[in-house]
Image (cartoon, rainbow, N blue to C red; front, side):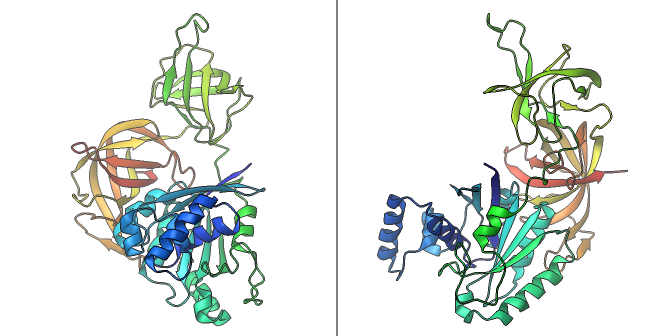
Length: 418
């Protein structure tokens, strides 16, 4: 079955956790003991109904404040598709958590409170979803029951979001009026909104086309680990384990190994279930080569005539995730890109982006927690990368503080610096 990863994003109290609870409940994906626990907790809190948000808000602080703090993952399946949900926080303080949860998503559910319309966090999360290259956006105008299911309210928010999205790199946007609390247009079609003729949220999640979102053109195989059993059963076995980041690999294909530049051919491709005829994203496989080459972790296997860009200097958009330090020119970090780790220095901060107006603030001296900006990095060893818009796996990286080993930044590569 095909797997769809999606993240719920939006402002505080827009109903993200409640929507996930409603999806799981109406699709009959909640076990009885979990339902009984939510019912008991809801009664002890004095709620007049079973609070579906308790299904994902598991931290005590989340339940006390009624907000999402950490990213909660939930898994369920329907006869048509399997799903992994990332319930991300809406508070500006936890924007970095939202970036983490949405970074691997195929689709983003952007919730907007029908009473409030688009607010700062709605714009922030829409911009970040676009920046992360999430291919599909679904704007759920929630709490329609509190505005008497007024079509004019939905149309106004739709027009407002469409105007904002026209300034982003967004290609697929769907709008659905819902009530997560009442279940309108979540799994079952609402009787209160006959004016809406589009699909329900669940129907769209089951049918949205994601097969063409991965890059099947550019072969990219970052080597993660060298397999040498050195046993009597496999005396001469040498394989290179990793996750296919792009393209399609088949036995007999001509390949080149970077950074050495040596060419060879694929002898075979193995998995835990045995040999396979081809490997494609996001399969985890072991690639065997015909020649004994010096290949180690961090090397990249690709096609001789279709190589990634190799450069010490890159331009990138970075979301700063550290509350203890600022990103500033001259700072040094460890940069992790695919399976390769190098040291890097911040050469320059080109500008910082105001997520509300999308204005570029020039001349800034640093980036603080949750701020997003464009920077120039120089690394001690070359990176083998593609532009993020072409390949999200080979175009992304993280920055790590060498003193604390904390992840302090998440980056998307734009292009090499001239």
